[in-house]
Image (cartoon, rainbow, N blue to C red):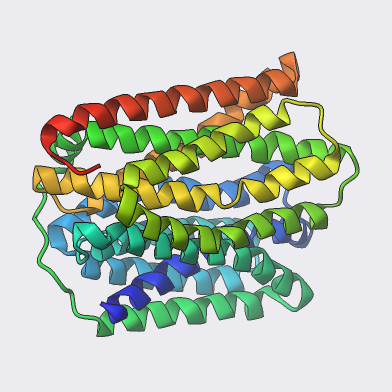
Length: 386
């Protein structure tokens, strides 16, 4: 189990690392390759868009062919794309490389999570997923640091380091036994239909959207307000990194608590904490108070994640499915929420002001938490422990 956890941790860490490493480098790439704002936006968005498109099919493939094999494919793809990204000499090529990174990351993430949860007994999943959420938070802290290293030295050196970590993940995956034989899922359409008919799945997806509903609004409007107030990007970055650093310990603690009180209760702690943040920002706050909110919101996603994935895997177990499609579906909905919420919140804030946008965000989260509670109550008839 330790070898499997290390292989999965390395895979997840490098994905989280590179997801955020590009942010500090956007001005450098824009200058180096003459990217317009649209070009810079394409560079920033190409990874999450590709990730979003491939993660659910990759999770299903993990259920058909075994997660370890799919992890190897995704990590190999990711490694090659990272090498291309480091060596790219044109704007078009660096955007393409970033897109390919997102494909590799989406494949590896979905299969790695299925591989891990499929080899852990239900009673231990909360603790293990809590530890993995801590790994993801560590990657979120290290990502901007890697970007700063690239700016201070060279992208070749920094992304060479990331490639070396991806190589370690690939070797660890190759050397780790496949573990338990997991159920072979039916067709993707049928698998998704079964999952979406299960109340625990709807519960978990509502919680995933609640995270996006809160964090996307806070990240967009909060950082813009700080910038308008003259707060430096470095200060904003430090606040976000500090929140992610707190998330490392929060996920581990939440996992242990989840073993005692159940994953749903842990998820609700994270959801309520996230839901409070937009309401706080609807108040007239000083810049240092907004920075404090950016720090405070950081630990709640790992707490929420620690609850969401045991709910999804419990539903998959109940339906006799592997965990690949279930886990990937939760991540797909979460990613879609982060793509949609800022696009919906921005025009509302421009037309009616930030306080109204924040209150609508808070109301959305409250509604989603209520839906999750209703679905959890309905799942009791299925004799599940959450």
